[in-house]
Image (cartoon, rainbow, N blue to C red; front, side, top):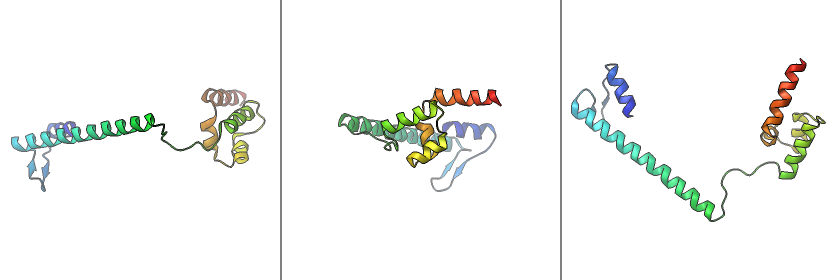
Length: 124
């Protein structure tokens, strides 16, 4: 908000907040806008800090966040083997496990996918 206020001021634009009675064309209005900006930034940082503390506390209790993977470790390994051996396409692997292609790509090792895409381009 501070940079937005400074940018608006450089362009000669005044900000009038009717509900709070703030007018950045005046010295008092700019001061109030600055104080509210600082308070908003403090509040945001407190929320982030509390969230990080909560996540750390949950991890300490053995909780893991995020969505569970669609493929098990064995399924992901099989998908990698099929893909590396070029036995099946990504779509066929996805159909085999009943997941979208994006899920298969997410479980494949990135360097393998990029290597095969580059090789396919060279063959064209």
